[in-house]
Image (cartoon, rainbow, N blue to C red; front, side):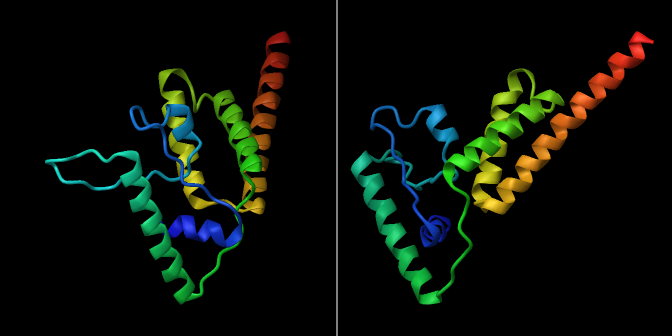
Length: 153
């Protein structure tokens, strides 16, 4: 919960719970920056939705109070829409250089989303990653143009 509380210092955040029988879909999980695991007893490994919500909100309150006692604050993360635009641009660039391809592309992009999402990138950091994606795409286009010109000669 401490990372969630850090995000609350700068704006909004959400705890997302899926339906009790099925949980969240893979697409919904992909949009989450953090995943929470609640350890349970092996004799009773499942929690119902109300239990999970109660535990999470209790831990969130504890983390909030601890943060307030420590007085720490962090820089605001970029807006969710800006991060989504950055992830899409990065995915396209990584596909163009064949870093993301085949049946491993989805899981690898999912891992990258979580890696970057957990960092809570600021607007400036999202802009840096957008610039990286743009530069990768420019280089791929330049390389393919140069290769086409060489083959035409």
